[in-house]
Length: 291
Image 1 (cartoon, rainbow, N blue to C red):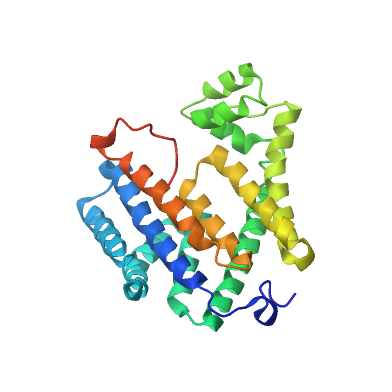
Image 2 (cartoon, rainbow, N blue to C red):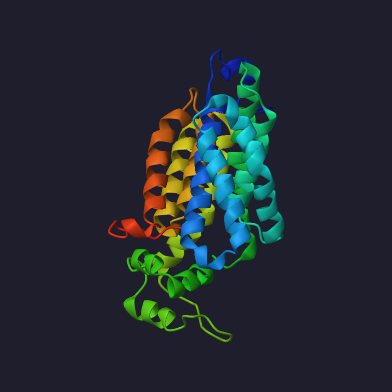
C-alpha cells in the first residue's frame, strides 16, 4: 500500500490526465470568479472586482492554448493564496482542494512519470478529503443529534425540501421560525429516527469511502461508493463547484484519463450557471447553488 496508484502496475505510456486536469481546473477557476462576480457584485469593491475579472479573463483565454495553461495557473495562484489568507483559519475544504490542485499542477510537467506522480497525489487527496470531512463531522459532534443540519433547514429552502421526507412538517415550521438566527434561538433538536439515521450516514459514508479506497481489492467499489456519496451530498448541499472538482480528483483512480470525459459536461454546467447571473438571461431557471 505504498502507493494508491502504483507506477509499475498502473502507469502507462500516453497518459493525459495532467493536461486534462489543468484544463478542467482553469475552466473551474475562471467560472468560479465569474459567478462570484455576478452573484456577489454588490459586496465586492471595485478593485477586488477588477482583480477577479482580470484573473478570470486571463484564465479563460489560456484554456484555448495548452502551452499557456501553466502560465495561467501561475497568474491565478496569488489570488487563490489571498483567498486562503483572507479566510484563514476558517478556510472551507473546497478552497484547500482548489489551492492544493493548483500547486500540484504547477509543479508537474506532462511526461508519463509526471502523470503517475499527479495520480498518486490526487488519489491520496481524495482519500484524505473523504476521511477528514467525515472525521471533522464526527469530532464536532453536531451530527449525532442532527443539530448542525437542523440550522440549515431553518435557513435554506432546498434543505427543507429534501428533509421534508424525513422531518415532520411541524418541526420544519418550528425551525423555520428561528430564521434569521439569533442568540438564544432553538432548540434545534429533531426526534425523527429516519432524520437522525440519514444525518449520521453522512459522516459514516465519507469515512467508509476513504477506507474502501485505501485497498486495491475494494478500490473499484470504493470509487463507485465515493462518487455516489458525492452525488448524494451535492443533491442537498448544492456546492456544485466543489462537487465537480472533487469528482475530477476521484477519477485519478481510473485506469485511463476519465477527466477529459468530464470536461464537456463541467464546462456546459459552468456556462449555464454563469448565464444565470447575467440580467439578460434572467428568464433562465436559476438553480440554488454555491460556487
